[in-house]
Length: 79
Image 1: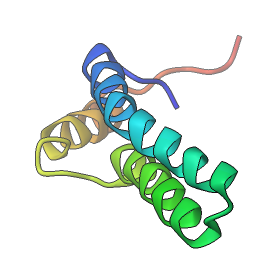
Image 2: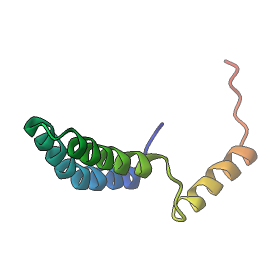
Image 3: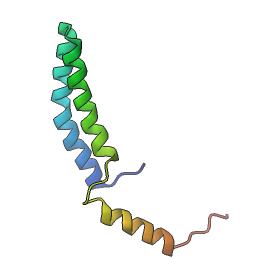
């Protein structure tokens, strides 16, 4: 899945937010609190997954443009 510059910056922002949460979850894991570790690690993973796979209203114009260009412009794959 190719990403543009804005998608990459958005992912970096989410990773900056999810990183400390994941480290806090790892700290709970080291202390032996499995419930807390699972909770915090799940939240951190959930943030990244939602950012990658959830379509937001700001993504819709780009998706529409991609489908429109794909329908209008036909490429020949025969070489």
